[in-house]
Image 1 (cartoon, rainbow, N blue to C red):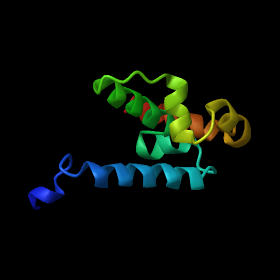
Image 2: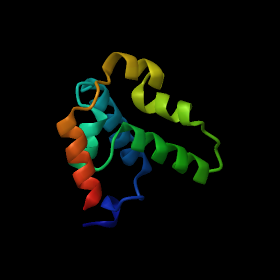
Image 3: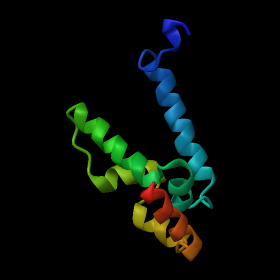
Length: 101
């Protein structure tokens, strides 16, 4: 791998990839956060927390709600009301099993 392809050397590319991930998640609102947590061990809320932490590392203050709104592309309460479904018993069992590992 060349130095040009090292993570951290291309912030513009990395930012574009991040925006594409957010757009992809936005286009697939049917994918629930619990499913992401079970399969990938992160979800939209994790992304908002990582965004907030990265902003704070740069000396910027970002509220939890502002970070979530960036990731969800709408207020979190609105997203929850329109798109979040209750987790099934099977999903909760899978999530708990994953946490035990």
